[in-house]
Length: 213
Image (cartoon, rainbow, N blue to C red; front, side, top):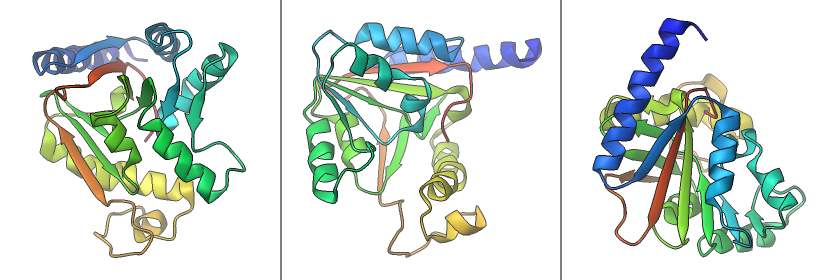
């Protein structure tokens, strides 16, 4: 990465961490994916059950393989060959896991987490249920404020995810948000976590690399 771009990213990351901490979150940033993998892995107690939300970021940094190798029970509804009933049971199990791993669609430099779900199990588990929640987000998820965060979710994250999932929705075809009424619409539940939820140990690890959508 260009030294000047790297410096610019570091300033943004530190501002965001400072704002998150001010809002009650535990937050830190790391230079690279490998640092994030090691930090998050060290935060998960041995023997803990782990739920994994619908996150390309968590899978991209290789945490699931590490957890399985250490013998953790992992609730992953993206696991191949699950029936619809098994997927539903897995989503529900995530909500009461000892640890829940996910990313955020946008993280504001003012210290908020913004997410949009189609089902809602991810945003539910981020707010209440699991004993510990760990959010990992690349520098590409940083935005100045809530307004820009909501724009990013619908105009960047949603179309890319729709394309990845092969959803027959307008943004997955045109790459542009159309505020659709499609039956396959994924923008159904919006959450803005402005402060650390009162009963949730919520940790945010930011990474100075692009991760996820």
